[in-house]
Amino acid sequence: MNAFAGRILVIGEALIDIVDRGGEPVRHVGGSPLNVAFGLARLGIATTFATEFGDDADGAAIAAHLASAGVTVARTAGQDLRTSTALARIGDDGSATYDFDLEWIFSAPPATAGISAVHIGSIGALRAPGSEGVLALVESLPDDVLVTFDPNVRPALMPPADLTRATVERYAARAAVVKLSDEDAEWLYPGQADAAPARLLAAGARLVAVTHGAAGSVLHTGSARLDVPVRPTVAVDTIGAGDAYMSGLIAAIVQRVGVVDALAGRFSGAQLAEIGRIAAVSSGLTVARAGAMPPTAAELEVELKAEPAGI
Image 1: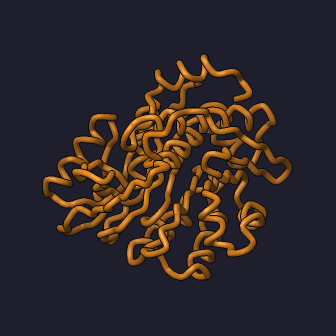
Image 2: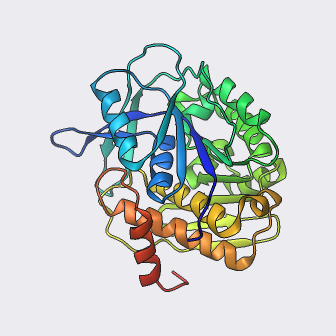
Image 3: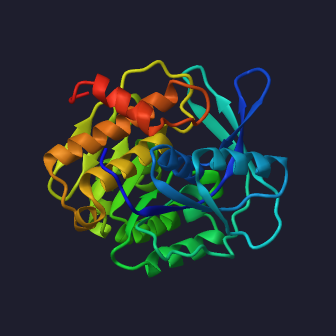
């Protein structure tokens, strides 16, 4: 992929996934925005992650994990707190369900000077009290900053669907790129999930990506719709699959399309096919191994060269 000289700021929760596969629980560093930040850095993009975690053993594990990929960390809690956790139970099909123990305060927003793009998502974008500050920061960004957004809905930790939907559409008014799963779409727009891309595009998004698990994903713009097949693989678990899709999508957009054209919604058919392919391959590599371990730039390039262009 082409070089991207800018820096991306990711904002959101960091936590420890306690993964139970029917035996001894295993602890993995996690959190959707953390996984995106980690994935972007592994793809060679300068990344700052604004997040919250405690000064405890779990927090030290998070800091070490982020440092291993070269992610710069900005702490946003402004006070001592415990590190959040999520108990993840893995089903026979590799899918995960979660029970959370989480706080999100966001009382010390990060600096945004010199930032080319901002990614927000999940609990950090939608759970009070911190979500109000995140939304205010996003709405105050200069017009030349690319914003990407993934609601990554967690119903137990978010306001009711009608209130969350209103907030999601406020983010979409500023986010050029929105990614959501088919489950997110159904929860946000019950009985009208197929209309979710049009609703988000009407709110202001330029590109909406909807993931459909093993059925692949669909990219929507104001003038195009593109089906993207899933990369065939043997799934170990799906933790981080959507986040690896998101980091691959963001990296492909800034490197193959560019911030200016993405902000304007200028995506050619060839560019849509390429960024969808990169996102799918990134996700496929991640589900083939345990935990949320997205590919490096070198691993992704090897797979892209091995895959036919129309995966």
